[in-house]
Image (tube, rainbow, N blue to C red; front, side):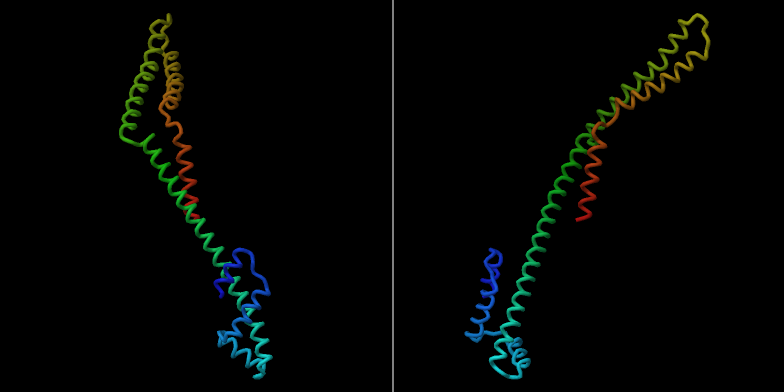
Length: 189
């Protein structure tokens, strides 16, 4: 009977009259809550009509409490299900981000490609940094030593910055920050 009432509550069709009807059916069939009936008789000093009235009041109150508890349990179960579903989504996103970081920046083939590029650009910029000032020094009429040295230092700085930009891992910081955000959210769940 309570199962039927719970089904009605979920569909929005439960009312006080249904609760009282359910308790009346319990009284008529004799399938009352024995402990509650005994308490009603004790409170009513053994008067049966008063005990029935007390039992009805207490039983409706108990059913309402059961319904409220069932609603609370249903809401908690839904919240847990939603949290579990979000956890699954975050774990999948974490795996995808980790795989993408590995594939784009950490795999052996990618690392070898970066090392080759670093060597080539390093040799190129080093050659430019040394050859250009020396060529200018050789071609300069006064051949002062400090001017090519100053030019060499400036070129080292400029070419060093260019070399850093050329060899930068574009997109890695963004992917790693997204991965950290997902991991923080996972630990909160």
